[in-house]
Image (cartoon, rainbow, N blue to C red; front, side, top):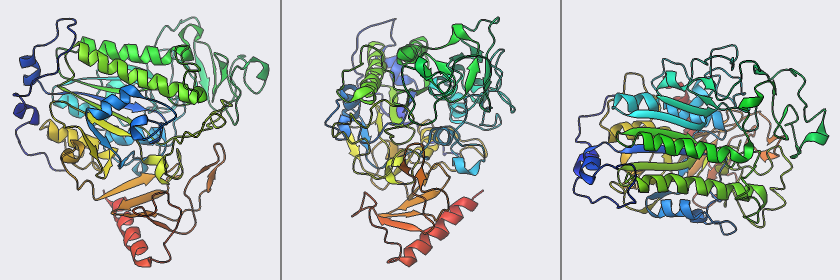
Length: 516
C-alpha cells in the first residue's frame, strides 16, 4: 500500500469548533490545548454482541441508554462487518490490517497459545506509536502470549502485547471460559505467588483441582456442552490448570476491574494523545453479572450482562466528559462477531429470551457465514469531526487501520496492513458509497463475499452445523447466492437462477485470495 499523501490533518481544520463542557477534574487540558492535539482514539470490542442486542438498533426487551446516547452523538452503522465470525481471527484482522485466513494459526486460540501476531508485523498500535501516540490495551486479548511451544505464566511472559506496539498491557489471556483465569499486566500475572506456580494444559488434566466432569456437585453453573474441565470460582472451564490461587479472578468483578483499568489509563494519559484498545468480556460466556446487574434485565444473565456492558460504556464516556476529552476523542464501539445464545453453559439464555432477537432479522450468528455471524453493531463518535448520522454504507473492520492512518496523516510502513483499504470518509459518516466488497469468514474458514446487493458463499464440505451451539455455519457443498436487497435473512438461495453472478463472484474471491 502506498504511503498517504501529505494532506492537512483533519483536526487542524477543526480549531474553530467549541469543545463540549464537562466537570473539571485533575487539571484538564484547556480547549486550546485540545484543539492543537491529535485526537485520542478508543476502540472498544464487545464480545459476542448481536446487532439486535441494543435498543439503538431496535431491541425492545432490553434498554442500553449509554450506548444509545453514544449512537445518537455519532455515526451509527447498519452495514458494518467484523472480518470473522469468531474472536481470535476478528481481533487479528483489526490489529494487523490483514485478513486472518491468510495466516494458518488464527483459529480460536487456547489460553496457553503463543502470541499469534509476529513481532515483525507492523500493527495498528505500531502505526499509532509512529504518529506519536501512547498506546494501551486493556481487557480481553485472545491473541496468545509468549513464545511458540506454550506460555509460561510463572515468569515474565514475552513476547506479549508490548512487543507489537502497545506501551501498556492489562489483559485476560484468552476468553473468560478458558484457563488460566488470571490477569496479565505488562508480561506478569497479577498477584501471582511464586510459591504457588501456575500449570496450564489443554491436552490432559494437571494437578488435583476439581473438574466439572469429575465433581459436578461443586459447580454453580452447569455446562450444556464441553466446559467440564477445571472448576474456578464454581464454574467449569475449557482446559486444565492448577496453582496461582492468589491470582485468580472473580467473575462477578471482571467488568469492574477492566473498566477501572481503562479509566485509569485514560486519566494517566489525559495530557497526551493516546490510543486505547479495550476488550470487554461481556457478553461472552460464562455470563456472570455483578450483583448490581443480576436479575435486572428480565432476560436472564445474558440480558443482565448486556446491562453491565452498557454501564461499562457509560463509565468510559463519563470519564472523557469529566476530563474534558470528549470532543477530541474518537470513540469506536463494536463487536468482534455476532451473537450466540447457548454457548456451552446452562444459563437459560434461550429460555429467557422473552421475544428478544439478538440476531435481528438475520440468519446465523457467531461461528456462521450467514449475516448474523459478522454483521455487527458499529458506532463511532467524534464530536469535533463527525455529525450524528445513520451510516448505511458498506464497511469492514479490516479498514479501520488504513482509515485512521489517513486521518492522522501517517504514512504506512512498507508491507503494513496489506488488506486494509482507506475508507476514512465512510468511517466519518461522510461517504455513502462505502466499500466495494466485504469478505466474511466463518468458523471453518469458509468465505463469503458481499458486493452490491449480492452475497456469495463459496462451496464447502465442512460441517453444516456447529455441534456445540447448534448454529448454522453456512457450509454447503454447492455455492450459495443471496440477494440481500430483497432477502436480507438469506432464505432463498438463487445460485441456480444466476450462474453468471456465481461465476463472477467465484473468480473475484479467488483473485482476492491470491493477492500477496
